[in-house]
Image (tube, rainbow, N blue to C red; front, side, top):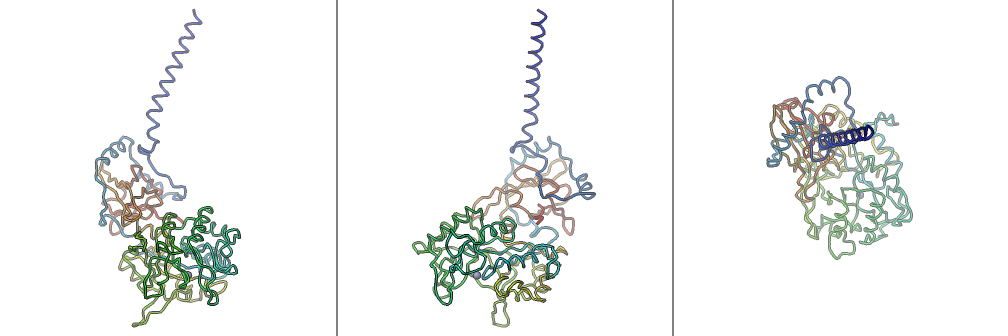
Length: 465
Ligand SMILES: [Zn+2]
Protein backbone atom coordinates (compact mmCIF):
# COMPACT_ATOMS: atom_id res chain seq x y z
CA UNK A 1 0.00 0.00 0.00
CA UNK A 2 2.76 2.37 0.99
CA UNK A 3 4.48 1.64 -2.30
CA UNK A 4 1.27 2.37 -4.24
CA UNK A 5 0.78 5.68 -2.39
CA UNK A 6 4.39 6.69 -3.14
CA UNK A 7 3.87 5.74 -6.76
CA UNK A 8 0.73 7.94 -6.93
CA UNK A 9 2.61 10.90 -5.45
CA UNK A 10 5.35 10.40 -8.04
CA UNK A 11 2.82 10.38 -10.90
CA UNK A 12 1.13 13.51 -9.47
CA UNK A 13 4.55 15.19 -9.26
CA UNK A 14 5.38 14.31 -12.87
CA UNK A 15 1.98 15.58 -14.13
CA UNK A 16 2.35 18.79 -12.12
CA UNK A 17 5.86 19.40 -13.49
CA UNK A 18 4.70 18.73 -17.03
CA UNK A 19 1.84 21.25 -16.73
CA UNK A 20 4.19 23.82 -15.18
CA UNK A 21 6.61 23.42 -18.08
CA UNK A 22 3.77 23.81 -20.60
CA UNK A 23 2.58 27.02 -18.92
CA UNK A 24 6.14 28.37 -18.84
CA UNK A 25 6.67 27.62 -22.58
CA UNK A 26 3.34 29.18 -23.54
CA UNK A 27 4.36 32.42 -21.82
CA UNK A 28 7.97 32.64 -22.91
CA UNK A 29 7.93 31.13 -26.43
CA UNK A 30 5.70 33.74 -28.13
CA UNK A 31 8.19 36.44 -27.17
CA UNK A 32 10.72 34.78 -29.45
CA UNK A 33 8.61 34.18 -32.53
CA UNK A 34 8.37 36.51 -35.47
CA UNK A 35 4.81 37.58 -34.76
CA UNK A 36 5.61 38.94 -31.35
CA UNK A 37 7.86 41.64 -30.05
CA UNK A 38 11.52 41.08 -29.60
CA UNK A 39 13.46 43.64 -27.72
CA UNK A 40 16.18 44.29 -30.30
CA UNK A 41 17.47 43.22 -33.66
CA UNK A 42 21.13 42.46 -33.15
CA UNK A 43 23.80 43.30 -35.66
CA UNK A 44 26.83 41.07 -35.81
CA UNK A 45 28.92 43.96 -37.13
CA UNK A 46 28.11 46.06 -34.13
CA UNK A 47 31.13 47.66 -32.53
CA UNK A 48 29.62 50.35 -30.31
CA UNK A 49 31.28 49.88 -26.95
CA UNK A 50 32.37 51.73 -23.82
CA UNK A 51 30.95 54.73 -22.05
CA UNK A 52 28.94 56.13 -24.96
CA UNK A 53 27.07 52.89 -25.37
CA UNK A 54 26.29 52.64 -21.67
CA UNK A 55 25.09 56.21 -21.50
CA UNK A 56 22.82 55.93 -24.52
CA UNK A 57 21.51 52.55 -23.37
CA UNK A 58 20.64 53.98 -19.98
CA UNK A 59 18.70 56.76 -21.61
CA UNK A 60 17.17 54.51 -24.21
CA UNK A 61 16.23 51.03 -23.02
CA UNK A 62 13.11 50.85 -20.94
CA UNK A 63 10.43 49.19 -23.02
CA UNK A 64 8.39 46.69 -21.13
CA UNK A 65 7.15 43.67 -23.03
CA UNK A 66 3.62 44.63 -22.00
CA UNK A 67 4.07 48.05 -23.65
CA UNK A 68 5.30 46.44 -26.82
CA UNK A 69 2.27 44.17 -27.09
CA UNK A 70 0.05 47.22 -26.72
CA UNK A 71 2.13 49.19 -29.26
CA UNK A 72 1.88 46.37 -31.78
CA UNK A 73 -1.86 46.01 -31.40
CA UNK A 74 -2.20 49.79 -31.90
CA UNK A 75 0.08 49.69 -34.96
CA UNK A 76 -2.11 47.00 -36.46
CA UNK A 77 -5.00 49.46 -36.56
CA UNK A 78 -2.99 52.16 -38.37
CA UNK A 79 -2.61 53.10 -42.01
CA UNK A 80 0.90 52.87 -43.44
CA UNK A 81 2.14 55.59 -45.79
CA UNK A 82 5.11 57.53 -47.22
CA UNK A 83 5.60 61.20 -46.46
CA UNK A 84 8.85 62.75 -47.82
CA UNK A 85 8.66 65.51 -45.17
CA UNK A 86 9.28 62.96 -42.40
CA UNK A 87 12.51 61.75 -43.96
CA UNK A 88 15.95 63.29 -43.90
CA UNK A 89 17.42 63.15 -47.42
CA UNK A 90 20.70 61.59 -46.26
CA UNK A 91 21.81 59.84 -43.08
CA UNK A 92 22.93 62.21 -40.33
CA UNK A 93 25.29 64.12 -40.49
CA UNK A 94 25.73 64.04 -44.28
CA UNK A 95 24.16 66.42 -46.75
CA UNK A 96 25.12 64.68 -49.98
CA UNK A 97 26.01 61.24 -51.28
CA UNK A 98 28.74 60.45 -53.82
CA UNK A 99 29.62 57.39 -55.86
CA UNK A 100 32.37 56.49 -58.28
CA UNK A 101 31.33 53.99 -60.92
CA UNK A 102 34.27 52.46 -62.79
CA UNK A 103 34.11 50.49 -66.05
CA UNK A 104 36.49 47.56 -66.31
CA UNK A 105 37.79 48.15 -69.87
CA UNK A 106 41.38 46.87 -70.28
CA UNK A 107 41.86 46.45 -66.52
CA UNK A 108 44.06 43.54 -65.51
CA UNK A 109 43.63 41.75 -62.20
CA UNK A 110 46.89 43.22 -60.93
CA UNK A 111 45.85 46.78 -61.75
CA UNK A 112 42.43 46.22 -60.17
CA UNK A 113 43.95 44.92 -56.94
CA UNK A 114 46.55 47.69 -56.80
CA UNK A 115 44.22 50.66 -57.20
CA UNK A 116 41.48 49.17 -55.00
CA UNK A 117 43.96 48.55 -52.21
CA UNK A 118 44.64 52.27 -52.34
CA UNK A 119 40.98 53.31 -52.69
CA UNK A 120 39.22 50.85 -50.38
CA UNK A 121 41.66 49.96 -47.60
CA UNK A 122 43.64 51.96 -45.08
CA UNK A 123 46.78 49.91 -45.75
CA UNK A 124 50.12 51.53 -46.32
CA UNK A 125 50.58 51.39 -50.09
CA UNK A 126 53.36 52.57 -52.43
CA UNK A 127 51.12 55.59 -53.12
CA UNK A 128 50.56 56.59 -49.53
CA UNK A 129 48.07 55.51 -46.92
CA UNK A 130 44.95 53.95 -48.42
CA UNK A 131 41.76 56.01 -48.41
CA UNK A 132 39.36 53.43 -46.97
CA UNK A 133 36.48 54.60 -49.19
CA UNK A 134 33.57 52.44 -50.35
CA UNK A 135 34.20 52.32 -54.10
CA UNK A 136 32.87 49.57 -56.36
CA UNK A 137 33.87 48.41 -59.82
CA UNK A 138 32.59 46.25 -62.67
CA UNK A 139 33.58 43.03 -64.47
CA UNK A 140 32.89 40.88 -67.50
CA UNK A 141 31.83 37.29 -67.89
CA UNK A 142 33.32 36.92 -71.40
CA UNK A 143 35.74 38.69 -73.68
CA UNK A 144 35.61 38.36 -77.46
CA UNK A 145 39.33 37.74 -77.67
CA UNK A 146 40.77 34.83 -75.64
CA UNK A 147 43.95 36.93 -75.38
CA UNK A 148 42.21 39.86 -73.69
CA UNK A 149 43.75 40.06 -70.21
CA UNK A 150 41.06 42.20 -68.60
CA UNK A 151 38.98 41.18 -65.59
CA UNK A 152 36.62 38.53 -66.95
CA UNK A 153 35.42 35.24 -65.53
CA UNK A 154 36.44 33.13 -68.54
CA UNK A 155 39.05 33.09 -71.28
CA UNK A 156 37.27 34.32 -74.38
CA UNK A 157 33.77 32.87 -74.45
CA UNK A 158 34.74 29.39 -73.32
CA UNK A 159 33.07 28.55 -70.00
CA UNK A 160 35.32 25.52 -69.71
CA UNK A 161 38.32 27.82 -69.51
CA UNK A 162 38.05 29.71 -66.22
CA UNK A 163 40.12 32.88 -65.92
CA UNK A 164 39.29 35.11 -62.92
CA UNK A 165 35.86 33.73 -61.92
CA UNK A 166 36.95 32.85 -58.37
CA UNK A 167 38.70 36.20 -57.88
CA UNK A 168 35.66 38.05 -59.21
CA UNK A 169 33.44 36.15 -56.77
CA UNK A 170 35.83 37.05 -53.93
CA UNK A 171 35.87 40.76 -54.77
CA UNK A 172 32.11 40.79 -55.44
CA UNK A 173 31.49 39.48 -51.92
CA UNK A 174 34.01 41.96 -50.54
CA UNK A 175 32.14 44.86 -52.20
CA UNK A 176 34.91 45.97 -54.56
CA UNK A 177 32.79 44.81 -57.51
CA UNK A 178 29.09 45.53 -57.71
CA UNK A 179 28.13 45.93 -61.35
CA UNK A 180 28.37 44.02 -64.61
CA UNK A 181 29.80 45.87 -67.60
CA UNK A 182 27.40 43.93 -69.82
CA UNK A 183 27.94 40.22 -70.13
CA UNK A 184 31.18 40.70 -72.08
CA UNK A 185 33.54 42.82 -74.10
CA UNK A 186 32.56 42.35 -77.74
CA UNK A 187 34.23 45.46 -79.14
CA UNK A 188 36.14 45.12 -82.41
CA UNK A 189 39.71 43.95 -82.12
CA UNK A 190 41.92 45.61 -84.78
CA UNK A 191 38.70 46.65 -86.51
CA UNK A 192 37.46 43.05 -86.69
CA UNK A 193 34.28 41.80 -85.02
CA UNK A 194 35.31 38.61 -83.24
CA UNK A 195 32.14 37.27 -81.64
CA UNK A 196 28.43 38.01 -81.89
CA UNK A 197 26.95 38.11 -78.37
CA UNK A 198 23.83 36.07 -79.11
CA UNK A 199 21.06 35.00 -76.75
CA UNK A 200 22.54 31.53 -76.27
CA UNK A 201 25.88 32.95 -75.11
CA UNK A 202 24.20 35.48 -72.81
CA UNK A 203 22.11 32.71 -71.25
CA UNK A 204 25.31 30.72 -70.70
CA UNK A 205 26.73 33.81 -69.01
CA UNK A 206 23.82 34.10 -66.56
CA UNK A 207 24.00 30.39 -65.76
CA UNK A 208 27.71 30.79 -65.01
CA UNK A 209 27.04 33.82 -62.79
CA UNK A 210 24.41 31.89 -60.85
CA UNK A 211 26.63 28.86 -60.43
CA UNK A 212 29.38 31.06 -58.96
CA UNK A 213 26.89 32.93 -56.75
CA UNK A 214 27.60 36.31 -58.34
CA UNK A 215 24.39 38.35 -58.47
CA UNK A 216 24.95 41.89 -59.77
CA UNK A 217 21.99 44.30 -59.68
CA UNK A 218 23.58 46.94 -61.96
CA UNK A 219 24.09 46.59 -65.71
CA UNK A 220 26.34 49.13 -67.44
CA UNK A 221 26.34 49.28 -71.25
CA UNK A 222 29.75 49.06 -72.88
CA UNK A 223 31.77 49.68 -75.94
CA UNK A 224 31.45 50.18 -79.66
CA UNK A 225 28.54 49.32 -81.96
CA UNK A 226 29.45 45.63 -82.14
CA UNK A 227 28.20 45.37 -78.55
CA UNK A 228 24.68 44.68 -79.74
CA UNK A 229 23.84 43.22 -76.30
CA UNK A 230 23.57 46.83 -75.00
CA UNK A 231 20.03 48.01 -74.41
CA UNK A 232 17.75 50.76 -73.16
CA UNK A 233 19.31 53.60 -75.15
CA UNK A 234 18.33 52.72 -78.72
CA UNK A 235 18.14 55.65 -81.07
CA UNK A 236 18.10 55.10 -84.87
CA UNK A 237 20.34 58.07 -85.65
CA UNK A 238 23.00 57.75 -82.97
CA UNK A 239 25.83 55.39 -82.09
CA UNK A 240 23.31 53.42 -80.03
CA UNK A 241 21.47 52.31 -83.16
CA UNK A 242 22.85 48.77 -82.89
CA UNK A 243 21.55 48.24 -79.33
CA UNK A 244 19.41 45.15 -79.70
CA UNK A 245 19.52 43.51 -76.27
CA UNK A 246 15.92 44.52 -75.54
CA UNK A 247 14.52 43.87 -79.04
CA UNK A 248 12.37 40.75 -79.09
CA UNK A 249 13.32 38.47 -81.96
CA UNK A 250 16.84 39.89 -82.38
CA UNK A 251 19.67 37.36 -82.18
CA UNK A 252 20.92 38.88 -78.93
CA UNK A 253 17.57 39.57 -77.21
CA UNK A 254 18.13 38.95 -73.50
CA UNK A 255 16.40 41.53 -71.30
CA UNK A 256 13.73 38.99 -70.30
CA UNK A 257 16.47 36.68 -68.96
CA UNK A 258 18.57 39.52 -67.58
CA UNK A 259 15.76 40.96 -65.43
CA UNK A 260 14.72 37.52 -64.22
CA UNK A 261 18.29 37.14 -63.00
CA UNK A 262 18.13 40.17 -60.75
CA UNK A 263 19.29 43.26 -62.66
CA UNK A 264 17.55 46.30 -61.16
CA UNK A 265 19.44 49.35 -62.41
CA UNK A 266 20.74 50.19 -65.88
CA UNK A 267 23.20 52.70 -67.30
CA UNK A 268 21.81 52.95 -70.83
CA UNK A 269 24.74 54.80 -72.47
CA UNK A 270 23.26 58.17 -71.60
CA UNK A 271 26.12 60.69 -71.62
CA UNK A 272 25.75 63.70 -69.31
CA UNK A 273 27.87 66.50 -67.87
CA UNK A 274 25.38 66.98 -65.02
CA UNK A 275 27.06 65.78 -61.84
CA UNK A 276 24.46 66.54 -59.14
CA UNK A 277 21.04 64.90 -59.05
CA UNK A 278 18.06 65.33 -56.76
CA UNK A 279 17.28 61.77 -57.82
CA UNK A 280 19.69 59.79 -60.01
CA UNK A 281 16.97 57.31 -61.04
CA UNK A 282 14.70 57.65 -64.06
CA UNK A 283 12.37 55.32 -65.91
CA UNK A 284 13.20 53.73 -69.24
CA UNK A 285 10.77 51.77 -71.37
CA UNK A 286 12.57 48.94 -73.11
CA UNK A 287 11.70 47.81 -76.61
CA UNK A 288 10.25 44.57 -75.21
CA UNK A 289 7.85 46.81 -73.22
CA UNK A 290 9.46 46.21 -69.82
CA UNK A 291 9.68 49.35 -67.71
CA UNK A 292 12.96 49.53 -65.78
CA UNK A 293 15.12 51.85 -63.68
CA UNK A 294 18.03 53.62 -65.29
CA UNK A 295 20.49 55.88 -63.48
CA UNK A 296 22.46 58.98 -64.38
CA UNK A 297 26.21 59.15 -64.10
CA UNK A 298 28.47 61.99 -65.12
CA UNK A 299 31.10 61.29 -67.76
CA UNK A 300 31.80 64.65 -69.42
CA UNK A 301 32.34 68.32 -68.67
CA UNK A 302 30.92 71.35 -70.38
CA UNK A 303 33.29 74.20 -71.25
CA UNK A 304 31.40 76.96 -73.04
CA UNK A 305 29.50 74.91 -75.56
CA UNK A 306 32.10 72.18 -75.76
CA UNK A 307 31.51 68.80 -74.15
CA UNK A 308 34.61 66.73 -73.34
CA UNK A 309 34.91 63.28 -71.79
CA UNK A 310 36.58 63.25 -68.40
CA UNK A 311 35.92 59.61 -67.43
CA UNK A 312 39.57 58.60 -67.35
CA UNK A 313 41.75 58.33 -64.21
CA UNK A 314 43.44 61.64 -65.04
CA UNK A 315 39.93 63.11 -65.27
CA UNK A 316 39.38 62.44 -61.57
CA UNK A 317 40.90 65.84 -60.75
CA UNK A 318 38.05 67.41 -62.75
CA UNK A 319 35.36 65.02 -61.57
CA UNK A 320 36.08 65.64 -57.89
CA UNK A 321 36.59 69.30 -57.10
CA UNK A 322 35.86 71.44 -54.08
CA UNK A 323 33.33 73.41 -56.10
CA UNK A 324 31.42 70.30 -57.18
CA UNK A 325 31.36 68.88 -53.65
CA UNK A 326 30.20 72.19 -52.17
CA UNK A 327 27.47 72.42 -54.81
CA UNK A 328 25.99 69.00 -54.10
CA UNK A 329 26.09 69.73 -50.36
CA UNK A 330 24.30 73.04 -50.87
CA UNK A 331 21.66 71.42 -53.05
CA UNK A 332 21.35 68.20 -50.99
CA UNK A 333 22.12 66.04 -54.00
CA UNK A 334 23.47 62.70 -55.14
CA UNK A 335 26.45 62.55 -57.45
CA UNK A 336 27.64 59.57 -59.47
CA UNK A 337 30.71 59.88 -61.64
CA UNK A 338 31.84 57.42 -64.29
CA UNK A 339 35.47 56.46 -64.74
CA UNK A 340 37.75 53.82 -66.27
CA UNK A 341 40.31 53.31 -63.53
CA UNK A 342 42.25 50.55 -65.21
CA UNK A 343 42.18 51.43 -68.85
CA UNK A 344 44.83 54.08 -69.37
CA UNK A 345 47.97 53.30 -67.43
CA UNK A 346 49.66 50.19 -66.27
CA UNK A 347 49.91 49.30 -62.62
CA UNK A 348 48.59 52.48 -60.95
CA UNK A 349 46.26 54.90 -62.71
CA UNK A 350 46.27 58.10 -60.66
CA UNK A 351 48.59 61.09 -60.94
CA UNK A 352 49.44 63.46 -58.08
CA UNK A 353 46.49 65.76 -58.80
CA UNK A 354 44.05 62.85 -58.94
CA UNK A 355 45.26 61.51 -55.60
CA UNK A 356 44.79 64.99 -54.18
CA UNK A 357 41.20 65.05 -55.49
CA UNK A 358 40.50 61.60 -54.01
CA UNK A 359 41.93 62.70 -50.66
CA UNK A 360 39.69 65.75 -50.78
CA UNK A 361 36.68 63.47 -51.20
CA UNK A 362 37.85 61.42 -48.24
CA UNK A 363 38.15 64.61 -46.20
CA UNK A 364 34.57 65.60 -47.02
CA UNK A 365 33.42 62.22 -45.80
CA UNK A 366 35.53 62.42 -42.63
CA UNK A 367 34.07 65.86 -41.92
CA UNK A 368 30.55 64.42 -42.10
CA UNK A 369 29.59 66.31 -45.26
CA UNK A 370 29.52 63.80 -48.13
CA UNK A 371 28.88 60.09 -47.73
CA UNK A 372 30.82 58.02 -50.26
CA UNK A 373 29.07 54.79 -51.26
CA UNK A 374 29.50 52.10 -53.87
CA UNK A 375 26.92 52.59 -56.65
CA UNK A 376 24.71 49.60 -55.72
CA UNK A 377 24.38 50.90 -52.15
CA UNK A 378 23.62 54.41 -53.32
CA UNK A 379 20.93 53.26 -55.75
CA UNK A 380 19.33 50.91 -53.23
CA UNK A 381 19.35 53.75 -50.72
CA UNK A 382 17.61 56.06 -53.22
CA UNK A 383 14.91 53.42 -53.75
CA UNK A 384 14.39 52.92 -50.02
CA UNK A 385 14.39 56.67 -49.35
CA UNK A 386 11.84 57.32 -52.10
CA UNK A 387 9.47 54.46 -51.38
CA UNK A 388 9.72 53.36 -47.74
CA UNK A 389 6.29 52.69 -46.19
CA UNK A 390 5.84 53.17 -42.44
CA UNK A 391 3.54 54.48 -39.76
CA UNK A 392 4.00 56.30 -36.44
CA UNK A 393 2.30 56.18 -33.06
CA UNK A 394 2.89 57.69 -29.64
CA UNK A 395 2.54 55.49 -26.59
CA UNK A 396 3.57 55.98 -22.98
CA UNK A 397 5.78 58.98 -23.75
CA UNK A 398 7.58 57.34 -26.68
CA UNK A 399 7.19 57.64 -30.46
CA UNK A 400 7.27 54.38 -32.42
CA UNK A 401 7.97 54.31 -36.16
CA UNK A 402 7.20 50.95 -37.72
CA UNK A 403 8.56 50.28 -41.22
CA UNK A 404 6.54 47.82 -43.29
CA UNK A 405 7.97 47.72 -46.79
CA UNK A 406 9.69 49.48 -49.66
CA UNK A 407 7.08 49.82 -52.40
CA UNK A 408 9.26 50.11 -55.50
CA UNK A 409 6.80 50.95 -58.31
CA UNK A 410 8.83 48.96 -60.85
CA UNK A 411 10.30 46.06 -58.86
CA UNK A 412 7.29 45.64 -56.56
CA UNK A 413 6.94 45.45 -52.81
CA UNK A 414 10.12 44.61 -50.91
CA UNK A 415 9.81 43.36 -47.33
CA UNK A 416 12.99 44.91 -46.01
CA UNK A 417 15.80 43.46 -43.98
CA UNK A 418 17.79 45.92 -41.90
CA UNK A 419 20.44 46.12 -44.69
CA UNK A 420 17.76 47.29 -47.17
CA UNK A 421 17.10 50.23 -44.86
CA UNK A 422 20.60 51.35 -43.88
CA UNK A 423 20.76 55.13 -43.79
CA UNK A 424 16.97 55.70 -43.67
CA UNK A 425 16.47 58.61 -41.28
CA UNK A 426 13.31 60.12 -39.78
CA UNK A 427 12.94 63.56 -38.27
CA UNK A 428 11.50 63.39 -34.78
CA UNK A 429 10.75 65.67 -31.82
CA UNK A 430 13.05 63.77 -29.52
CA UNK A 431 15.43 61.19 -30.93
CA UNK A 432 16.11 59.46 -27.64
CA UNK A 433 12.39 59.00 -27.06
CA UNK A 434 11.79 57.51 -30.51
CA UNK A 435 11.97 53.85 -31.48
CA UNK A 436 12.25 52.35 -34.95
CA UNK A 437 10.65 49.00 -35.70
CA UNK A 438 10.76 46.84 -38.82
CA UNK A 439 7.55 44.87 -39.10
CA UNK A 440 6.92 45.11 -35.36
CA UNK A 441 10.47 44.24 -34.30
CA UNK A 442 12.41 46.93 -32.53
CA UNK A 443 15.72 47.91 -34.07
CA UNK A 444 18.44 47.71 -31.44
CA UNK A 445 20.41 50.71 -30.26
CA UNK A 446 23.59 49.42 -31.91
CA UNK A 447 21.89 49.80 -35.27
CA UNK A 448 20.54 53.29 -34.67
CA UNK A 449 22.01 56.64 -35.59
CA UNK A 450 20.90 59.58 -33.45
CA UNK A 451 20.92 63.06 -34.90
CA UNK A 452 20.64 65.92 -32.49
CA UNK A 453 21.82 68.77 -34.66
CA UNK A 454 19.68 71.47 -36.29
CA UNK A 455 16.70 69.12 -36.32
CA UNK A 456 16.46 65.95 -34.23
CA UNK A 457 16.41 62.69 -36.11
CA UNK A 458 16.76 58.96 -35.70
CA UNK A 459 17.89 56.60 -38.43
CA UNK A 460 19.18 53.15 -39.19
CA UNK A 461 22.94 53.15 -39.13
CA UNK A 462 24.84 53.08 -42.43
CA UNK A 463 27.02 50.08 -43.30
CA UNK A 464 30.17 49.76 -41.25
CA UNK A 465 32.39 48.77 -44.14
ZN1 LIG B 1 33.36 49.97 -71.29
